[in-house]
Length: 360
Image (cartoon, rainbow, N blue to C red):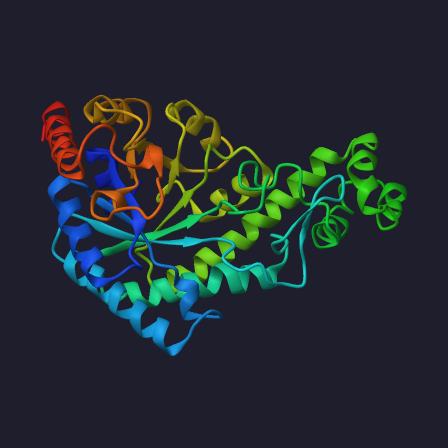
């Protein structure tokens, strides 16, 4: 591992907080002062960069620019790095849709559609990279892989999906050298709802998923290279509920990571380290941080210490509710049986205790 920021996280542990930085100036000022007090070293601050592209308006763009600059400027010359957060599927628009083995459709573009990658991933990432060139406080970008509002995709994103024509045509194009000519000639005529069982019966379903996964890796590497041409120092990160276990998540994380610069992974898994060894054997290089839900535990110190044993750190879910009163009850994300002030003090003490344990 060569990247200095990754080396630092290996030494100190990832101590992150997740929240939005798109509310207003006062919120961001309070948020930054709070994470400084707690002793975090990473702000996963969702910045919604798509608002600078297809969703932009002059008023929203001006407001967002000011909020981004405020965060970056106030974190300059501190020990905290801002990782700009963005959702992978912020738009539902597109000429393609994800379709599953039984023909079920998710209202978001196919991940095998390169136009989708350019619009939803590459363009906003370039915006983040161009912004980061002016601020050493921006350490990287975190891509949220959940498909919010698209059940059941939010939980098991692409496991049983990827049979739409866009994905299937990629397999037809790339599989010819791996299968007999007779089987290959039959591929084009298989209707969508028959594809899964037909591929399974022919013994090439595993090959199908592997080709999709490798294509996603190719796309991700292409995007990573374009972004790092702008700022070669950026570190990439991801969020999803669990460890990568399907063709899409494995493919994208492989493409954005390397042995010299692992990607960061934020999940709800609490024992991720053993699985990371398995992933490394698949050329997927990650450092994981586990969620600390402010409303789940009264003893934050125990969770934080354990996060360094079984993961590479933790992320607070969510730091917004330490400085802002929620308009609706968020339950497990709100400090349990204590005021925000008490929660902040407890988190500060927990990090100080961790420093002693780690010899700082």
